[in-house]
Length: 503
Image: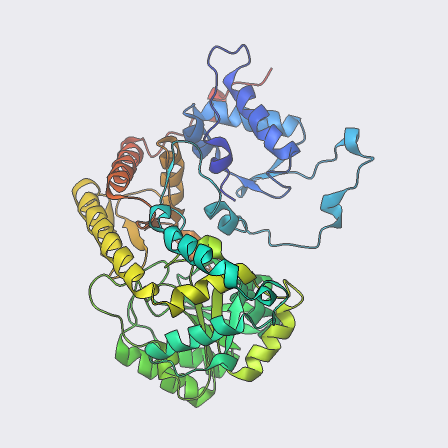
């Protein structure tokens, strides 16, 4: 868990009679008491804590010592400082909720999806969440559709509907996919409360603890977390260059994985596009071994130059590709409307599992999306967002080349929402993130997209959520942060004898 988001809006008062170390300790203690920082949370190293508050490392060390004295943290030599299990004596008569919870992932990045969609601190420019720009939400069209059709709507559409989804929407989605070369029908479609729900349902239906799953590395944070939470053993297939089908076949033969999860088009986070021949070779390999492929495709409509190759599902000749789509990236995420395309036997089993979660997805959203698709509103909307996002991509490309070329290397994405960057200089993306927090800029460090620890030199920047002026300002702040960590002495440790005792 990155605690900078909880603390970067807090300011120390140099005029306060309390010393700075004590102010820091009390700020962190407050987050621990409120269980914003739960037991087991790893706190930043002293150097990063010092950078976060712009104080000396001595002050940071003394803050941690005070927290230890208060019984709120403990230190493991060579590992770091962690939030301790605490007992609030004053409220001991209350229900001990944390003791009743089932086990949950103690991964430092366990809450990152929730963090990404939370409101950033005032004045902060977030390049973290992969979101459409609210200014481009087609709310005027949805308002007009609602007002024009609500009086004549079938009221039964707003009662309970089949768990599989609103039938007219399933039919419209099937028609939309057919235009993309995906041969499908209504019975092959399950509507979802966002495509993330599809990943969760697939994990519940297909995976048992100990099953193997193959994923690209790096890949979508949400997929990593869903499969790990299901107890799956994750095998990582590097996707920075050519996809190694030889390694994938080795995984298949040795481990018999239940599925291979892939984002072949404008991959998150790298932006990579799997070439057409590579897609066909992957299908041939999967068909030979009857391997299930989960194709996650949230970005293929967001191309800025030429159209991407056909989807894996369009090439599916053995019925083994499960296709996930969403309207979050192309319309707006608040719709919480996604879909899954697969064989009817799988759709039926997923629907049985879905009924335990939400019975069916939001009716009104499905009703509105149906009219949006059936009245031909999607194509002109996509033309608008593609044109606008291309301008933003180009503006951010120029800004990064002009201001950050000495510190970052990156490739220009052909589509999607992200720049995938790598630090050239010494330092890590986590350290840059702490420095950037002070300059009111945020991003996602690269390690969040891997199942195994990395060198932590990569970072992802989203360019779709802000206009060109804001993007320029964000790159200026990022450049300032890069300059600051470059200028800082890489070895500013102080000897133990210079650490002031706490009195």
